[in-house]
Amino acid sequence: MTQETGEYRVRKSDAEWREQLTPQEYHVLREAGTERPHTGEYTDTKTVGVYSCRACGAELFTSDTKFDSHCGWPSFYSPLAEDRVEYIEDTAFGMRRVEVRCGSCGSHLGHVFEGEGYATPTDQRYCINSISLRLRPQEG
Image (cartoon, rainbow, N blue to C red; front, side, top):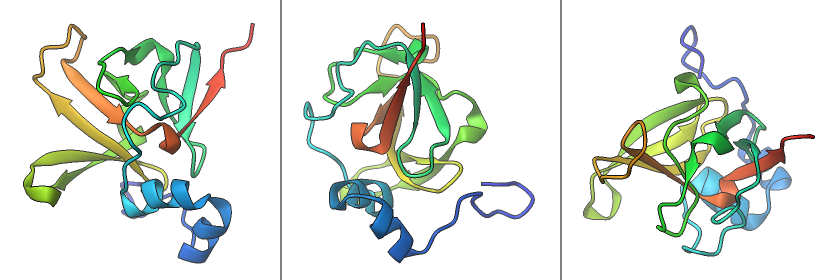
């Protein structure tokens, strides 16, 4: 989202998103759904590279910040840069959580939690749906 306009850099109509994304991708990215735990393509991936938003291609996380949280979804302790994501208070299902969205297109990525005691530099866990991401392996 740009600070100047308050709008996302990537904007598409609902029909355009539906045409671009599979029904499962659309449900998670555009309707804030969640994939089932331990089913995502990147849950246990150790490949070195950059994780981008599956909807718009914006680079969001690197494998350097990915860690094993054993929660069933890929976990990162920090985004690539703070302006790459946005945070929305989520009170759905009677819980208080912080939703993480792509800062470029507003697509739902997952949630961020803190204070769980992981031995990471930020004590945060970005719990991200694999289906929200696309991994570009490092060459070489």
